[in-house]
Image 1: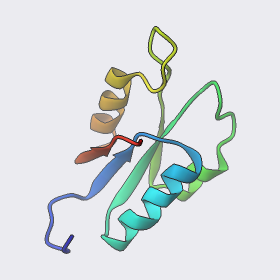
Image 2: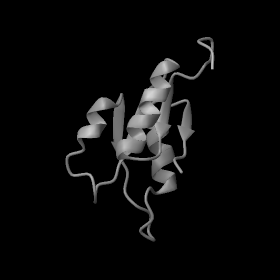
Image 3: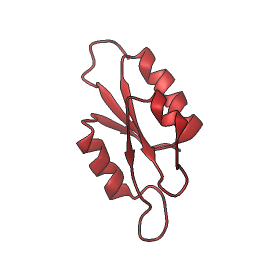
Image 4: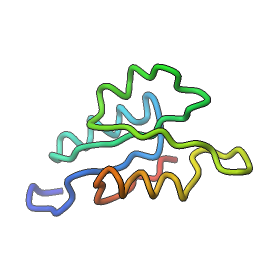
Amino acid sequence: MSEDHDLRRLLAACRGEAALRIRRAAAREGLEVVGLIDPARDQDPLWAGALDGAAIVPPDTRGRWPAVEAAVAAAIDAGCDAVYPGW
């Protein structure tokens, strides 16, 4: 990707090491990365401090994390231009 892209901020819909790997790759392209925090598993996520932002997103009503609607809302609230959906 070249420096003339319109993307500036990306929501990484994953946690931990995966979010950090996305952050490293995105930084090479001049992008900021916002990560998602699972309130049930991430009590004090040190990895989140290495990102440009983070949002707490609960699981959906069936217990699947992240709740898609909440993740999209978090991306919009954080000013993200795109979402990396994880794996």
